[in-house]
Length: 102
Image 1 (cartoon, rainbow, N blue to C red):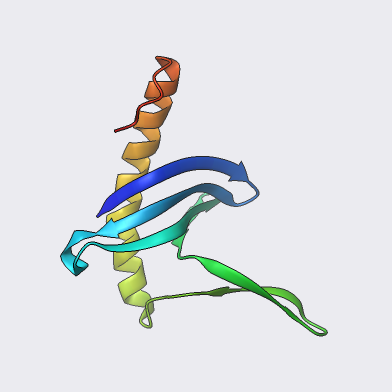
Image 2 (tube, rainbow, N blue to C red):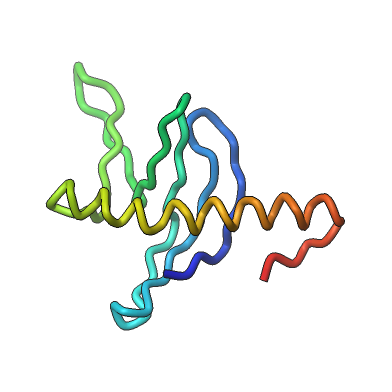
């Protein structure tokens, strides 16, 4: 997997946004993925859209998702270490006043 356009947002549970390329899927690109954190939990979310339901309020719905939750967990287990490394590299680059991450 390849991460592009990584940007730290740090607003509410949203920590960062990024685009994800999966070469094994024919260079399939998912734009607008989110890396979310709350307390000690963290997760990856595919792009969402919002709908306002009468009496229920705003709900976030995913454009795409894994039907099987175990597959999503495996996906996160593979992706989160990549995001951690990229975040550490971006912080290191900030400290050296370098804007280039790649």
